[in-house]
Length: 187
Image (cartoon, rainbow, N blue to C red; front, top):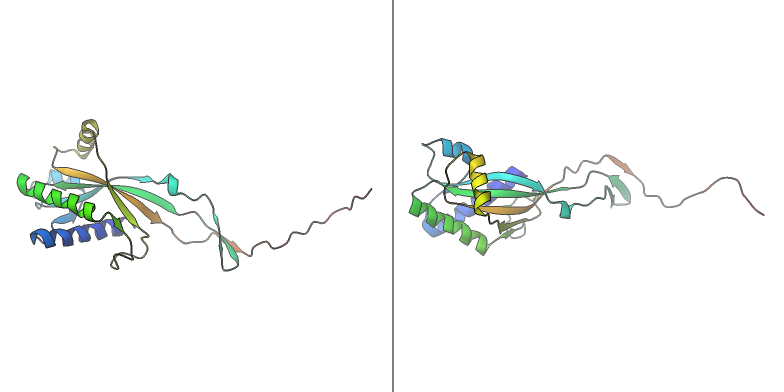
């Protein structure tokens, strides 16, 4: 689901930028640390996953689900937040112009569902994007981790990718009555 979600967002941003600037495929999904090492890399905006975390607030601790008069035991869904870094390695002014379009895109539309976007994989329930602001120390740490000099960039937190394998571990009938047997103690 992670790859499908990032590919979907890349494609939607590319459509938006093509409408605005008539540039085809201006956003590419790639590992930004590898791109920064390669001086012959295409001059584009790069979308790169730099971190992910479990969204524990959305976690459902229940392993038992009732479906059609059956009780199913399965592992609960895993909810993830992805941190998506958009980096431009283009001419400075052109890069800033296209980076501004990333802001405009997410300001215009920051929630994506299969109802609003039929091209979205039906396995994705919803994607919500929020700008994730960094202070200078955090920015320095990220660029140090990526092993490169700073390039104009913006970080968005993509909430919530849900991973549900849909494999049941056990299945059975619900308990409808309880019978207690044993000695009868009467006074």
